[in-house]
Image 1: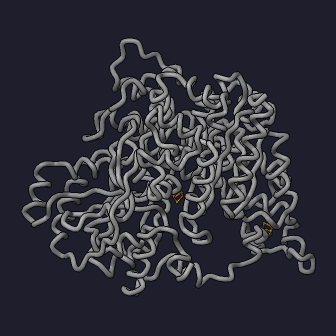
Image 2: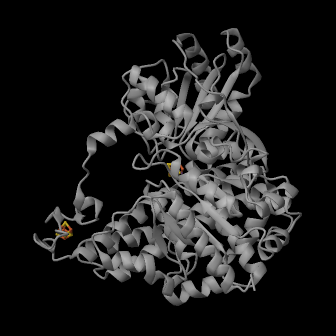
Image 3: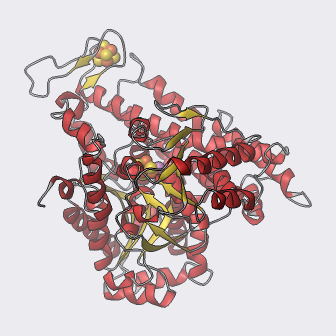
Length: 623
Ligand code: CUV
Ligand code: SF4
Protein backbone atom coordinates (compact mmCIF):
# COMPACT_ATOMS: atom_id res chain seq x y z
CA UNK A 1 0.00 0.00 0.00
CA UNK A 2 2.00 2.89 -1.25
CA UNK A 3 -0.30 5.84 -0.69
CA UNK A 4 -3.25 7.05 1.32
CA UNK A 5 -5.70 6.38 -1.52
CA UNK A 6 -4.69 2.74 -1.69
CA UNK A 7 -4.83 2.51 2.06
CA UNK A 8 -8.41 3.76 2.12
CA UNK A 9 -9.89 1.60 -0.64
CA UNK A 10 -9.02 -1.39 -2.81
CA UNK A 11 -11.08 -0.03 -5.71
CA UNK A 12 -9.47 1.67 -8.66
CA UNK A 13 -12.36 4.11 -9.11
CA UNK A 14 -12.26 4.94 -5.41
CA UNK A 15 -8.52 5.62 -5.45
CA UNK A 16 -8.68 7.83 -8.53
CA UNK A 17 -11.69 9.71 -7.24
CA UNK A 18 -10.04 10.27 -3.84
CA UNK A 19 -7.16 11.91 -5.67
CA UNK A 20 -9.62 14.08 -7.60
CA UNK A 21 -11.52 14.97 -4.42
CA UNK A 22 -8.29 16.05 -2.78
CA UNK A 23 -7.48 18.25 -5.76
CA UNK A 24 -10.98 19.76 -5.55
CA UNK A 25 -10.55 20.21 -1.78
CA UNK A 26 -13.52 17.99 -1.01
CA UNK A 27 -13.61 16.64 2.52
CA UNK A 28 -14.56 12.94 2.59
CA UNK A 29 -15.73 10.41 5.14
CA UNK A 30 -12.10 9.24 5.50
CA UNK A 31 -10.90 12.77 6.38
CA UNK A 32 -13.58 13.13 9.01
CA UNK A 33 -12.79 9.68 10.40
CA UNK A 34 -9.14 10.68 10.82
CA UNK A 35 -10.22 13.90 12.54
CA UNK A 36 -12.21 11.86 15.08
CA UNK A 37 -9.25 9.75 16.14
CA UNK A 38 -8.77 8.63 18.82
CA UNK A 39 -12.46 7.84 19.23
CA UNK A 40 -13.89 7.75 22.74
CA UNK A 41 -12.76 4.56 24.49
CA UNK A 42 -15.78 4.43 26.80
CA UNK A 43 -18.17 4.63 23.86
CA UNK A 44 -16.14 2.12 21.87
CA UNK A 45 -16.61 -0.37 24.70
CA UNK A 46 -20.28 0.51 25.18
CA UNK A 47 -19.56 1.84 28.67
CA UNK A 48 -21.08 5.30 28.37
CA UNK A 49 -24.76 5.92 29.07
CA UNK A 50 -26.94 8.86 28.10
CA UNK A 51 -30.25 7.21 28.85
CA UNK A 52 -31.29 9.70 31.51
CA UNK A 53 -30.52 13.14 32.82
CA UNK A 54 -28.90 12.04 36.06
CA UNK A 55 -26.13 11.14 33.60
CA UNK A 56 -24.35 11.07 31.26
CA UNK A 57 -22.41 8.34 32.99
CA UNK A 58 -19.48 6.10 32.23
CA UNK A 59 -17.95 3.05 33.81
CA UNK A 60 -14.20 2.80 34.06
CA UNK A 61 -13.01 -0.32 32.25
CA UNK A 62 -9.80 -0.50 34.31
CA UNK A 63 -11.67 -0.79 37.57
CA UNK A 64 -10.18 2.40 39.00
CA UNK A 65 -12.87 5.01 38.36
CA UNK A 66 -16.61 4.58 38.95
CA UNK A 67 -18.04 1.11 38.33
CA UNK A 68 -21.64 2.27 38.31
CA UNK A 69 -23.73 5.03 36.76
CA UNK A 70 -25.59 7.49 38.98
CA UNK A 71 -28.64 5.17 39.01
CA UNK A 72 -26.47 2.20 39.94
CA UNK A 73 -26.35 0.53 36.53
CA UNK A 74 -23.18 -1.52 36.09
CA UNK A 75 -21.17 -2.28 32.95
CA UNK A 76 -23.31 -5.29 32.00
CA UNK A 77 -26.54 -3.33 32.18
CA UNK A 78 -25.18 -0.31 30.35
CA UNK A 79 -23.64 -2.37 27.53
CA UNK A 80 -26.75 -4.52 27.08
CA UNK A 81 -29.02 -1.48 27.11
CA UNK A 82 -26.92 0.32 24.51
CA UNK A 83 -26.87 -2.71 22.24
CA UNK A 84 -30.62 -3.15 22.67
CA UNK A 85 -31.20 0.42 21.56
CA UNK A 86 -29.01 -0.07 18.49
CA UNK A 87 -31.11 -3.04 17.50
CA UNK A 88 -34.33 -1.14 18.15
CA UNK A 89 -33.16 1.67 15.86
CA UNK A 90 -32.12 -0.74 13.13
CA UNK A 91 -35.35 -2.72 13.33
CA UNK A 92 -37.34 0.52 13.31
CA UNK A 93 -35.56 1.72 10.16
CA UNK A 94 -36.21 -1.45 8.15
CA UNK A 95 -39.73 -1.86 9.43
CA UNK A 96 -40.72 1.73 8.77
CA UNK A 97 -39.41 1.29 5.23
CA UNK A 98 -41.70 -1.75 5.02
CA UNK A 99 -44.60 0.30 6.36
CA UNK A 100 -44.12 2.92 3.63
CA UNK A 101 -44.46 0.16 1.03
CA UNK A 102 -47.60 -1.18 2.69
CA UNK A 103 -49.06 2.33 2.48
CA UNK A 104 -48.32 2.45 -1.23
CA UNK A 105 -49.97 -0.96 -1.62
CA UNK A 106 -53.03 0.38 0.19
CA UNK A 107 -53.10 3.49 -2.01
CA UNK A 108 -52.80 1.36 -5.14
CA UNK A 109 -55.79 -0.66 -3.96
CA UNK A 110 -57.76 2.54 -3.43
CA UNK A 111 -56.74 3.97 -6.80
CA UNK A 112 -54.79 6.84 -5.24
CA UNK A 113 -51.32 6.00 -6.52
CA UNK A 114 -51.00 6.83 -10.22
CA UNK A 115 -47.97 5.17 -11.78
CA UNK A 116 -47.82 2.35 -9.25
CA UNK A 117 -49.45 -1.00 -9.97
CA UNK A 118 -49.61 -4.63 -8.93
CA UNK A 119 -46.83 -6.12 -11.04
CA UNK A 120 -46.56 -9.63 -9.60
CA UNK A 121 -50.13 -10.88 -9.16
CA UNK A 122 -48.94 -14.43 -8.41
CA UNK A 123 -46.88 -13.22 -5.48
CA UNK A 124 -49.74 -11.03 -4.28
CA UNK A 125 -51.96 -14.09 -4.15
CA UNK A 126 -49.40 -16.28 -2.48
CA UNK A 127 -48.63 -13.72 0.26
CA UNK A 128 -52.37 -13.10 0.72
CA UNK A 129 -52.81 -16.83 1.29
CA UNK A 130 -50.06 -16.70 3.91
CA UNK A 131 -52.16 -14.06 5.63
CA UNK A 132 -55.22 -16.30 5.48
CA UNK A 133 -57.02 -14.04 3.02
CA UNK A 134 -59.65 -15.69 0.86
CA UNK A 135 -58.61 -14.85 -2.70
CA UNK A 136 -61.31 -16.76 -4.61
CA UNK A 137 -62.81 -14.69 -7.37
CA UNK A 138 -61.38 -11.50 -5.96
CA UNK A 139 -59.80 -8.89 -8.21
CA UNK A 140 -56.09 -8.23 -7.51
CA UNK A 141 -56.81 -4.71 -6.25
CA UNK A 142 -59.26 -6.01 -3.71
CA UNK A 143 -56.76 -8.62 -2.51
CA UNK A 144 -54.11 -5.89 -2.33
CA UNK A 145 -56.34 -3.77 -0.08
CA UNK A 146 -57.06 -6.66 2.24
CA UNK A 147 -53.40 -7.66 2.32
CA UNK A 148 -52.26 -4.12 3.15
CA UNK A 149 -54.77 -4.08 5.99
CA UNK A 150 -53.64 -7.46 7.31
CA UNK A 151 -49.99 -6.42 7.16
CA UNK A 152 -50.73 -3.28 9.13
CA UNK A 153 -52.06 -5.63 11.80
CA UNK A 154 -48.60 -7.21 12.05
CA UNK A 155 -47.16 -3.85 13.03
CA UNK A 156 -49.36 -3.40 16.07
CA UNK A 157 -50.18 -5.38 19.18
CA UNK A 158 -53.06 -7.54 18.04
CA UNK A 159 -51.13 -10.75 17.48
CA UNK A 160 -49.38 -13.38 19.53
CA UNK A 161 -47.07 -14.24 16.63
CA UNK A 162 -46.18 -12.39 13.43
CA UNK A 163 -47.88 -13.90 10.39
CA UNK A 164 -44.84 -14.61 8.23
CA UNK A 165 -42.86 -16.50 10.89
CA UNK A 166 -44.80 -19.47 9.53
CA UNK A 167 -42.20 -19.51 6.76
CA UNK A 168 -39.51 -20.48 9.26
CA UNK A 169 -38.92 -24.20 9.88
CA UNK A 170 -41.24 -25.71 12.49
CA UNK A 171 -38.39 -26.55 14.86
CA UNK A 172 -37.21 -22.94 14.76
CA UNK A 173 -40.64 -21.59 15.65
CA UNK A 174 -40.90 -24.00 18.57
CA UNK A 175 -37.48 -22.90 19.75
CA UNK A 176 -38.53 -19.23 19.61
CA UNK A 177 -41.70 -19.98 21.58
CA UNK A 178 -39.82 -21.95 24.22
CA UNK A 179 -37.16 -19.27 24.58
CA UNK A 180 -39.81 -16.57 24.86
CA UNK A 181 -38.49 -14.67 21.85
CA UNK A 182 -41.28 -15.22 19.33
CA UNK A 183 -41.89 -11.77 17.79
CA UNK A 184 -45.46 -10.56 18.36
CA UNK A 185 -45.80 -7.14 16.77
CA UNK A 186 -43.27 -5.28 14.66
CA UNK A 187 -43.67 -1.91 16.35
CA UNK A 188 -44.41 -3.58 19.64
CA UNK A 189 -40.98 -5.18 20.00
CA UNK A 190 -39.16 -1.95 19.15
CA UNK A 191 -41.38 0.01 21.47
CA UNK A 192 -40.86 -2.52 24.24
CA UNK A 193 -37.09 -2.33 23.71
CA UNK A 194 -37.24 1.43 24.27
CA UNK A 195 -39.38 0.86 27.35
CA UNK A 196 -37.13 -1.79 28.82
CA UNK A 197 -34.06 0.39 28.34
CA UNK A 198 -35.59 3.41 30.07
CA UNK A 199 -33.96 4.04 33.45
CA UNK A 200 -35.34 1.70 36.06
CA UNK A 201 -37.02 -0.92 33.90
CA UNK A 202 -35.19 -4.03 32.67
CA UNK A 203 -31.88 -4.26 34.51
CA UNK A 204 -31.16 -7.87 33.71
CA UNK A 205 -28.53 -7.97 31.01
CA UNK A 206 -29.66 -11.43 29.93
CA UNK A 207 -33.34 -10.53 29.71
CA UNK A 208 -32.44 -7.35 27.83
CA UNK A 209 -30.45 -9.34 25.30
CA UNK A 210 -33.19 -11.94 24.91
CA UNK A 211 -35.65 -9.21 24.10
CA UNK A 212 -33.08 -7.77 21.70
CA UNK A 213 -33.27 -11.10 19.81
CA UNK A 214 -37.05 -10.85 19.69
CA UNK A 215 -36.81 -7.25 18.52
CA UNK A 216 -34.42 -8.24 15.72
CA UNK A 217 -36.68 -11.16 14.74
CA UNK A 218 -39.54 -8.70 14.40
CA UNK A 219 -37.40 -6.98 11.77
CA UNK A 220 -36.21 -10.09 9.93
CA UNK A 221 -39.44 -12.08 9.92
CA UNK A 222 -41.62 -8.95 10.05
CA UNK A 223 -40.79 -5.49 8.78
CA UNK A 224 -38.00 -6.42 6.38
CA UNK A 225 -39.84 -9.45 5.03
CA UNK A 226 -42.92 -7.30 4.42
CA UNK A 227 -40.71 -4.71 2.70
CA UNK A 228 -39.29 -7.32 0.34
CA UNK A 229 -42.59 -9.05 -0.40
CA UNK A 230 -44.51 -5.84 -1.05
CA UNK A 231 -41.67 -4.49 -3.22
CA UNK A 232 -41.89 -7.66 -5.31
CA UNK A 233 -45.67 -7.37 -5.54
CA UNK A 234 -45.52 -3.73 -6.64
CA UNK A 235 -42.40 -3.73 -8.80
CA UNK A 236 -41.85 -7.35 -9.76
CA UNK A 237 -39.97 -10.32 -8.33
CA UNK A 238 -36.35 -10.13 -9.51
CA UNK A 239 -35.00 -12.42 -12.22
CA UNK A 240 -31.36 -12.78 -13.28
CA UNK A 241 -30.45 -9.68 -15.29
CA UNK A 242 -27.11 -8.37 -16.54
CA UNK A 243 -25.96 -4.97 -15.31
CA UNK A 244 -22.86 -2.86 -14.87
CA UNK A 245 -21.23 -1.39 -11.79
CA UNK A 246 -18.71 1.18 -10.52
CA UNK A 247 -18.32 4.89 -11.15
CA UNK A 248 -17.76 4.20 -14.85
CA UNK A 249 -21.50 3.68 -15.28
CA UNK A 250 -21.88 7.48 -15.34
CA UNK A 251 -21.88 8.75 -18.92
CA UNK A 252 -19.96 11.70 -20.20
CA UNK A 253 -22.50 12.53 -22.92
CA UNK A 254 -25.78 11.82 -21.13
CA UNK A 255 -27.83 13.43 -18.39
CA UNK A 256 -26.80 11.49 -15.27
CA UNK A 257 -29.45 10.99 -12.61
CA UNK A 258 -28.43 9.16 -9.42
CA UNK A 259 -30.80 7.69 -6.85
CA UNK A 260 -29.49 7.00 -3.36
CA UNK A 261 -31.20 5.57 -0.29
CA UNK A 262 -33.41 2.57 0.21
CA UNK A 263 -37.05 2.60 -0.73
CA UNK A 264 -37.93 1.62 -4.32
CA UNK A 265 -41.10 3.71 -3.94
CA UNK A 266 -39.15 6.77 -5.13
CA UNK A 267 -36.51 5.19 -7.36
CA UNK A 268 -39.07 3.19 -9.37
CA UNK A 269 -40.94 6.38 -10.25
CA UNK A 270 -37.69 8.10 -11.23
CA UNK A 271 -36.91 5.14 -13.48
CA UNK A 272 -40.30 5.46 -15.18
CA UNK A 273 -39.76 9.18 -15.75
CA UNK A 274 -36.29 8.58 -17.21
CA UNK A 275 -37.90 6.43 -19.90
CA UNK A 276 -40.61 8.92 -20.96
CA UNK A 277 -40.24 9.69 -24.69
CA UNK A 278 -40.87 13.44 -24.29
CA UNK A 279 -38.20 13.72 -21.61
CA UNK A 280 -35.74 11.71 -23.73
CA UNK A 281 -36.48 14.10 -26.59
CA UNK A 282 -35.88 17.07 -24.32
CA UNK A 283 -32.51 15.63 -23.24
CA UNK A 284 -31.50 15.33 -26.91
CA UNK A 285 -32.53 18.92 -27.54
CA UNK A 286 -30.17 19.94 -24.76
CA UNK A 287 -27.34 18.16 -26.53
CA UNK A 288 -27.26 15.01 -24.40
CA UNK A 289 -27.36 11.54 -25.98
CA UNK A 290 -29.89 10.32 -23.44
CA UNK A 291 -30.86 10.04 -19.78
CA UNK A 292 -28.69 7.73 -17.73
CA UNK A 293 -30.09 6.52 -14.42
CA UNK A 294 -27.69 4.98 -11.91
CA UNK A 295 -28.13 3.83 -8.32
CA UNK A 296 -26.17 4.00 -5.10
CA UNK A 297 -26.44 1.78 -2.04
CA UNK A 298 -29.59 -0.20 -1.49
CA UNK A 299 -32.10 1.63 -3.63
CA UNK A 300 -29.51 1.05 -6.35
CA UNK A 301 -29.64 -2.67 -5.60
CA UNK A 302 -33.44 -2.58 -5.75
CA UNK A 303 -33.32 -1.17 -9.31
CA UNK A 304 -30.43 -3.43 -10.29
CA UNK A 305 -32.29 -6.52 -9.10
CA UNK A 306 -35.49 -5.78 -10.98
CA UNK A 307 -34.38 -3.81 -14.04
CA UNK A 308 -30.62 -4.24 -14.46
CA UNK A 309 -30.10 -0.52 -13.76
CA UNK A 310 -26.38 0.18 -13.20
CA UNK A 311 -25.00 0.93 -9.74
CA UNK A 312 -22.33 3.63 -9.41
CA UNK A 313 -21.03 2.57 -6.01
CA UNK A 314 -21.63 1.56 -2.42
CA UNK A 315 -21.72 3.52 0.83
CA UNK A 316 -18.20 4.98 0.91
CA UNK A 317 -18.41 5.96 -2.78
CA UNK A 318 -21.42 8.25 -2.38
CA UNK A 319 -19.44 11.47 -1.90
CA UNK A 320 -16.96 10.54 -4.61
CA UNK A 321 -19.69 9.95 -7.18
CA UNK A 322 -20.64 13.63 -6.90
CA UNK A 323 -16.98 14.63 -7.28
CA UNK A 324 -17.04 13.32 -10.87
CA UNK A 325 -18.84 16.55 -11.76
CA UNK A 326 -21.00 14.40 -14.02
CA UNK A 327 -24.15 14.11 -11.92
CA UNK A 328 -26.98 16.44 -12.91
CA UNK A 329 -29.22 15.42 -10.05
CA UNK A 330 -29.03 13.12 -7.03
CA UNK A 331 -32.29 12.11 -5.38
CA UNK A 332 -32.21 10.64 -1.90
CA UNK A 333 -34.86 9.12 0.33
CA UNK A 334 -33.58 7.75 3.62
CA UNK A 335 -30.94 5.73 5.49
CA UNK A 336 -27.17 5.77 4.95
CA UNK A 337 -27.24 9.16 3.24
CA UNK A 338 -24.32 11.12 4.64
CA UNK A 339 -25.33 14.63 5.71
CA UNK A 340 -22.13 15.79 4.02
CA UNK A 341 -23.47 15.18 0.51
CA UNK A 342 -25.06 18.60 0.10
CA UNK A 343 -21.74 20.28 0.90
CA UNK A 344 -19.89 18.12 -1.63
CA UNK A 345 -22.48 18.93 -4.28
CA UNK A 346 -22.12 22.67 -3.67
CA UNK A 347 -18.69 22.46 -5.35
CA UNK A 348 -20.26 21.13 -8.57
CA UNK A 349 -23.42 21.75 -10.55
CA UNK A 350 -25.17 18.72 -9.03
CA UNK A 351 -28.67 19.36 -7.73
CA UNK A 352 -29.47 17.49 -4.55
CA UNK A 353 -33.08 16.54 -3.83
CA UNK A 354 -34.48 15.04 -0.64
CA UNK A 355 -37.78 13.24 -1.17
CA UNK A 356 -39.02 11.73 2.09
CA UNK A 357 -41.25 13.44 4.62
CA UNK A 358 -39.01 12.03 7.34
CA UNK A 359 -35.52 12.82 6.08
CA UNK A 360 -33.97 16.26 5.50
CA UNK A 361 -30.38 17.10 4.73
CA UNK A 362 -28.34 20.32 4.71
CA UNK A 363 -27.69 21.69 1.25
CA UNK A 364 -30.55 19.76 -0.33
CA UNK A 365 -33.78 20.94 -1.84
CA UNK A 366 -36.81 19.20 -0.35
CA UNK A 367 -39.37 17.88 -2.83
CA UNK A 368 -41.64 15.45 -1.07
CA UNK A 369 -42.89 12.27 -2.73
CA UNK A 370 -46.27 10.79 -1.79
CA UNK A 371 -48.10 7.97 -3.57
CA UNK A 372 -50.52 10.43 -5.20
CA UNK A 373 -47.94 12.89 -6.58
CA UNK A 374 -44.95 10.60 -7.27
CA UNK A 375 -45.43 10.18 -10.99
CA UNK A 376 -45.86 13.88 -11.70
CA UNK A 377 -43.12 14.99 -9.32
CA UNK A 378 -40.67 12.49 -10.79
CA UNK A 379 -41.30 13.86 -14.29
CA UNK A 380 -40.93 17.43 -13.08
CA UNK A 381 -37.62 16.67 -11.40
CA UNK A 382 -36.19 14.83 -14.40
CA UNK A 383 -37.10 17.85 -16.53
CA UNK A 384 -35.16 20.05 -14.11
CA UNK A 385 -32.23 17.66 -14.17
CA UNK A 386 -32.14 17.87 -17.95
CA UNK A 387 -32.13 21.68 -17.73
CA UNK A 388 -29.14 21.37 -15.41
CA UNK A 389 -27.08 19.49 -18.03
CA UNK A 390 -26.03 22.83 -19.53
CA UNK A 391 -24.48 23.89 -16.23
CA UNK A 392 -21.99 21.04 -16.26
CA UNK A 393 -18.32 21.91 -15.83
CA UNK A 394 -15.42 19.53 -16.30
CA UNK A 395 -16.22 15.88 -15.92
CA UNK A 396 -13.95 13.12 -14.61
CA UNK A 397 -15.08 9.53 -15.09
CA UNK A 398 -11.82 7.61 -14.83
CA UNK A 399 -12.80 3.92 -15.25
CA UNK A 400 -14.77 1.56 -17.43
CA UNK A 401 -17.73 -0.18 -15.82
CA UNK A 402 -17.57 -3.84 -14.78
CA UNK A 403 -20.14 -6.39 -15.98
CA UNK A 404 -22.20 -8.29 -13.45
CA UNK A 405 -25.37 -10.35 -13.09
CA UNK A 406 -27.95 -9.65 -10.39
CA UNK A 407 -31.57 -10.44 -9.66
CA UNK A 408 -31.28 -13.66 -7.66
CA UNK A 409 -34.50 -13.74 -5.71
CA UNK A 410 -35.25 -17.10 -4.07
CA UNK A 411 -37.80 -17.67 -6.84
CA UNK A 412 -35.10 -17.03 -9.46
CA UNK A 413 -32.60 -19.33 -7.74
CA UNK A 414 -35.15 -22.15 -7.45
CA UNK A 415 -36.10 -21.68 -11.08
CA UNK A 416 -32.43 -21.73 -12.15
CA UNK A 417 -32.23 -25.03 -10.27
CA UNK A 418 -35.11 -26.39 -12.34
CA UNK A 419 -38.00 -25.67 -9.99
CA UNK A 420 -36.87 -27.27 -6.72
CA UNK A 421 -34.01 -26.75 -4.28
CA UNK A 422 -33.11 -30.45 -4.74
CA UNK A 423 -30.16 -29.96 -7.15
CA UNK A 424 -28.54 -27.48 -4.72
CA UNK A 425 -29.07 -29.94 -1.88
CA UNK A 426 -27.61 -32.75 -3.95
CA UNK A 427 -24.55 -30.63 -4.70
CA UNK A 428 -24.18 -29.86 -1.00
CA UNK A 429 -24.66 -33.50 -0.02
CA UNK A 430 -22.12 -34.60 -2.62
CA UNK A 431 -19.70 -32.06 -1.21
CA UNK A 432 -19.28 -30.23 -4.52
CA UNK A 433 -20.67 -27.24 -2.70
CA UNK A 434 -19.48 -27.34 0.91
CA UNK A 435 -22.09 -24.87 2.11
CA UNK A 436 -23.60 -21.44 1.64
CA UNK A 437 -22.47 -18.14 3.14
CA UNK A 438 -24.33 -14.84 3.19
CA UNK A 439 -21.97 -11.88 2.97
CA UNK A 440 -23.85 -8.70 3.74
CA UNK A 441 -23.73 -5.19 5.08
CA UNK A 442 -22.10 -1.84 4.77
CA UNK A 443 -18.76 -0.14 4.29
CA UNK A 444 -16.99 1.46 7.23
CA UNK A 445 -13.89 3.69 7.08
CA UNK A 446 -12.46 1.55 9.90
CA UNK A 447 -11.92 -1.18 7.29
CA UNK A 448 -10.17 -0.67 3.97
CA UNK A 449 -13.08 -0.04 1.60
CA UNK A 450 -14.34 -3.28 -0.04
CA UNK A 451 -11.31 -5.25 1.20
CA UNK A 452 -13.39 -7.18 3.74
CA UNK A 453 -16.19 -8.10 1.32
CA UNK A 454 -14.02 -9.01 -1.62
CA UNK A 455 -11.29 -10.94 0.21
CA UNK A 456 -13.75 -12.93 2.29
CA UNK A 457 -15.87 -13.77 -0.75
CA UNK A 458 -12.84 -14.83 -2.79
CA UNK A 459 -11.64 -17.18 -0.06
CA UNK A 460 -15.08 -18.71 0.34
CA UNK A 461 -15.75 -19.40 -3.33
CA UNK A 462 -12.21 -20.74 -3.81
CA UNK A 463 -13.15 -23.27 -1.17
CA UNK A 464 -16.41 -24.29 -2.84
CA UNK A 465 -18.70 -22.24 -0.63
CA UNK A 466 -21.53 -20.60 -2.57
CA UNK A 467 -21.81 -16.93 -1.62
CA UNK A 468 -25.09 -15.02 -1.60
CA UNK A 469 -24.80 -11.32 -0.89
CA UNK A 470 -26.82 -8.15 -0.44
CA UNK A 471 -26.40 -4.43 0.17
CA UNK A 472 -23.03 -2.76 -0.07
CA UNK A 473 -21.26 -6.15 0.10
CA UNK A 474 -23.07 -7.18 -3.08
CA UNK A 475 -21.95 -4.02 -4.86
CA UNK A 476 -18.36 -4.56 -3.68
CA UNK A 477 -18.09 -8.06 -5.11
CA UNK A 478 -19.81 -7.00 -8.33
CA UNK A 479 -17.24 -4.22 -8.80
CA UNK A 480 -14.49 -6.77 -8.17
CA UNK A 481 -15.76 -8.87 -11.08
CA UNK A 482 -16.99 -11.77 -8.96
CA UNK A 483 -20.45 -11.65 -10.55
CA UNK A 484 -19.41 -11.68 -14.18
CA UNK A 485 -20.68 -14.58 -16.23
CA UNK A 486 -17.21 -16.14 -16.23
CA UNK A 487 -16.44 -15.44 -12.57
CA UNK A 488 -16.62 -19.19 -11.99
CA UNK A 489 -12.93 -19.21 -12.87
CA UNK A 490 -12.36 -17.85 -9.36
CA UNK A 491 -14.32 -20.71 -7.77
CA UNK A 492 -13.10 -24.04 -6.46
CA UNK A 493 -13.61 -27.10 -8.73
CA UNK A 494 -16.93 -28.26 -7.24
CA UNK A 495 -18.60 -24.87 -7.14
CA UNK A 496 -17.25 -24.15 -10.60
CA UNK A 497 -18.80 -27.31 -11.97
CA UNK A 498 -22.22 -26.69 -10.40
CA UNK A 499 -22.42 -22.98 -11.26
CA UNK A 500 -21.06 -23.66 -14.74
CA UNK A 501 -23.78 -26.23 -15.39
CA UNK A 502 -26.49 -23.85 -14.15
CA UNK A 503 -25.03 -20.83 -15.93
CA UNK A 504 -24.85 -18.73 -12.76
CA UNK A 505 -21.94 -16.89 -11.11
CA UNK A 506 -20.50 -18.26 -7.85
CA UNK A 507 -21.64 -15.12 -6.02
CA UNK A 508 -25.36 -14.38 -6.19
CA UNK A 509 -26.69 -10.84 -5.74
CA UNK A 510 -29.83 -11.29 -3.65
CA UNK A 511 -30.69 -7.61 -3.27
CA UNK A 512 -30.75 -4.77 -0.79
CA UNK A 513 -30.50 -4.87 3.00
CA UNK A 514 -34.18 -5.64 3.56
CA UNK A 515 -33.63 -8.50 1.09
CA UNK A 516 -31.47 -10.29 3.64
CA UNK A 517 -34.76 -12.00 4.40
CA UNK A 518 -34.43 -13.71 1.02
CA UNK A 519 -31.39 -15.46 2.49
CA UNK A 520 -33.47 -16.60 5.47
CA UNK A 521 -36.18 -17.93 3.17
CA UNK A 522 -33.58 -19.81 1.11
CA UNK A 523 -32.10 -21.26 4.30
CA UNK A 524 -35.58 -22.30 5.45
CA UNK A 525 -36.22 -24.02 2.13
CA UNK A 526 -32.98 -25.99 2.51
CA UNK A 527 -33.77 -26.87 6.13
CA UNK A 528 -37.29 -28.01 5.24
CA UNK A 529 -35.97 -30.13 2.39
CA UNK A 530 -33.51 -31.79 4.76
CA UNK A 531 -36.04 -32.01 7.59
CA UNK A 532 -33.76 -30.11 9.94
CA UNK A 533 -33.48 -26.66 11.52
CA UNK A 534 -31.58 -23.71 10.04
CA UNK A 535 -28.95 -24.08 12.75
CA UNK A 536 -28.14 -27.60 11.48
CA UNK A 537 -27.27 -26.41 7.98
CA UNK A 538 -23.75 -25.84 6.64
CA UNK A 539 -24.44 -22.12 6.29
CA UNK A 540 -23.00 -18.95 7.79
CA UNK A 541 -23.40 -15.21 7.66
CA UNK A 542 -20.95 -12.35 7.71
CA UNK A 543 -20.91 -8.56 7.79
CA UNK A 544 -17.24 -7.78 7.14
CA UNK A 545 -17.50 -3.96 6.99
CA UNK A 546 -20.73 -3.17 8.83
CA UNK A 547 -21.40 0.25 10.29
CA UNK A 548 -25.15 0.81 10.70
CA UNK A 549 -27.66 0.02 13.43
CA UNK A 550 -29.65 -1.82 10.77
CA UNK A 551 -26.70 -4.17 10.34
CA UNK A 552 -26.77 -4.97 14.07
CA UNK A 553 -30.42 -5.89 13.77
CA UNK A 554 -29.68 -8.02 10.68
CA UNK A 555 -26.78 -9.83 12.35
CA UNK A 556 -28.94 -10.48 15.38
CA UNK A 557 -31.89 -11.90 13.47
CA UNK A 558 -29.49 -14.09 11.48
CA UNK A 559 -28.11 -15.52 14.71
CA UNK A 560 -31.57 -15.80 16.30
CA UNK A 561 -32.65 -17.69 13.18
CA UNK A 562 -29.80 -20.15 13.70
CA UNK A 563 -27.10 -18.72 11.42
CA UNK A 564 -23.55 -18.42 12.78
CA UNK A 565 -22.51 -14.85 11.94
CA UNK A 566 -19.03 -13.29 11.79
CA UNK A 567 -18.81 -9.52 12.19
CA UNK A 568 -15.87 -7.51 10.89
CA UNK A 569 -15.81 -4.37 13.04
CA UNK A 570 -16.27 -5.00 16.79
CA UNK A 571 -19.61 -3.77 18.13
CA UNK A 572 -19.51 -1.54 21.23
CA UNK A 573 -19.84 -4.37 23.75
CA UNK A 574 -16.32 -5.11 25.00
CA UNK A 575 -17.02 -3.25 28.25
CA UNK A 576 -18.97 -6.28 29.45
CA UNK A 577 -17.36 -9.70 29.24
CA UNK A 578 -20.71 -11.17 30.29
CA UNK A 579 -22.39 -9.69 27.21
CA UNK A 580 -19.48 -10.68 24.95
CA UNK A 581 -19.60 -14.26 26.25
CA UNK A 582 -23.34 -14.55 25.85
CA UNK A 583 -23.26 -13.27 22.28
CA UNK A 584 -20.26 -15.33 21.17
CA UNK A 585 -20.89 -18.55 23.13
CA UNK A 586 -23.98 -18.57 25.32
CA UNK A 587 -26.41 -18.01 22.46
CA UNK A 588 -25.46 -21.43 21.09
CA UNK A 589 -27.48 -22.93 23.94
CA UNK A 590 -30.42 -20.61 23.33
CA UNK A 591 -30.74 -20.40 19.53
CA UNK A 592 -28.12 -22.86 18.26
CA UNK A 593 -25.92 -20.14 16.79
CA UNK A 594 -23.71 -17.29 17.97
CA UNK A 595 -21.66 -14.33 16.80
CA UNK A 596 -17.94 -14.14 16.15
CA UNK A 597 -15.92 -10.99 15.54
CA UNK A 598 -12.97 -11.02 13.15
CA UNK A 599 -11.88 -7.89 11.28
CA UNK A 600 -9.33 -9.78 9.14
CA UNK A 601 -11.28 -11.34 6.23
CA UNK A 602 -8.65 -14.04 5.73
CA UNK A 603 -9.23 -15.25 9.27
CA UNK A 604 -13.00 -14.73 9.00
CA UNK A 605 -12.97 -17.07 5.98
CA UNK A 606 -11.26 -19.73 8.10
CA UNK A 607 -13.85 -19.34 10.85
CA UNK A 608 -16.67 -19.77 8.34
CA UNK A 609 -15.05 -22.74 6.63
CA UNK A 610 -14.46 -24.43 9.96
CA UNK A 611 -18.08 -23.83 10.96
CA UNK A 612 -19.44 -25.16 7.66
CA UNK A 613 -17.28 -28.27 7.82
CA UNK A 614 -18.37 -28.99 11.39
CA UNK A 615 -22.04 -28.69 10.41
CA UNK A 616 -21.42 -31.04 7.51
CA UNK A 617 -19.90 -33.59 9.86
CA UNK A 618 -22.78 -33.24 12.31
CA UNK A 619 -25.23 -33.95 9.49
CA UNK A 620 -23.15 -36.97 8.49
CA UNK A 621 -22.65 -35.56 5.00
CA UNK A 622 -19.04 -36.61 4.63
CA UNK A 623 -19.39 -40.01 6.26
NI1 CUV B 1 -29.19 -0.81 3.27
S1 CUV B 1 -27.14 -0.27 5.72
S2 CUV B 1 -24.43 1.12 4.14
S3 CUV B 1 -26.97 1.03 2.14
S4 CUV B 1 -25.44 -2.03 3.40
FE1 CUV B 1 -24.84 -0.20 2.61
FE2 CUV B 1 -27.45 -0.97 2.40
FE3 CUV B 1 -25.24 -0.72 5.10
FE4 CUV B 1 -26.50 1.23 4.26
FE1 SF4 C 1 -26.42 7.29 34.23
FE2 SF4 C 1 -28.19 5.39 34.90
FE3 SF4 C 1 -29.03 7.66 33.73
FE4 SF4 C 1 -27.60 5.87 32.34
S1 SF4 C 1 -29.64 5.56 33.20
S2 SF4 C 1 -27.34 8.08 32.32
S3 SF4 C 1 -26.22 5.05 33.90
S4 SF4 C 1 -28.04 7.45 35.72
